[in-house]
Image (tube, rainbow, N blue to C red; front, side, top):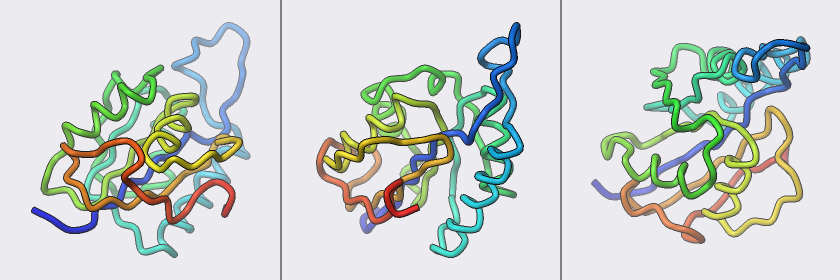
Length: 157
């Protein structure tokens, strides 16, 4: 199957720092919830409807996915938590070849480095709730560094 594919790389929204609470259990703050709602509106305005969402199992990424991608088919994958860009790329390469639009919800620094790897963009930051919309003509299995184009990124949010 050929043609353009769309990848959305989304960093979880702002999460609370609660003493004694495990990192994986940190929930979104009120601001984080608002930011995830903003992501939902922006993706809708861009006409993006994911075929598949790959999400870290942490509380903050789950909540971000639920708010930003309501009704989407979400697969929780523990490999995303604390993954580096090359590990995330390997995960994406195993993506369903039938999926035209895939969303990855994860954590920094991995998601920011992934955007830079795929697009050769050098955005200075990727704050909580930031996302990039990336287009590629490659199959997911052939996704490679520098071959995709970011059409929406944190600087434009």
